[in-house]
Length: 196
Image (tube, rainbow, N blue to C red; front, side):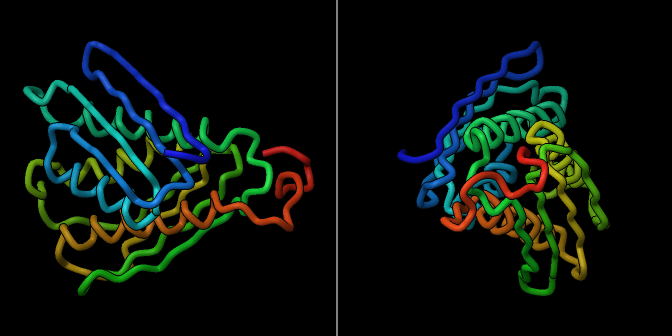
């Protein structure tokens, strides 16, 4: 890994997480959360955002998947924020409308330092593989709060929950890739206040 990299570890009585992200990667990943469907979603996030990502999670899956997925979101958000450093030169904003078969989703990001999360969309099933559909919203909310990110997500169309969820993770990846990208025309931070 080379470029803007951060490693964050977090250990509680519910989870033990180690995560490393490189914002300037090529989409390489090594992921083991103990939740197969969630691993698949994080792999898609890394590949389509061109982030190098290593994640290891030991969670209380004997209870359910909630703590594992929410806490991974917290750690991912912290790692993104840490890897961004001063945010000097980043484009700050990113958005993506992304299709996957019948599903269509929209994501918009502002790396403003002010967390705000809006999610509009419904799921038809309780679970996808070993991951609860309610955890999709919880994961992205956790990322938004811990990264200080304004994150809007909307499911525009679709009926297959796997497709909708995968499209959300990929759309988030594409939007974040735009927002963290460096623009040589931005010599400081993209704000009239002078800080983000």
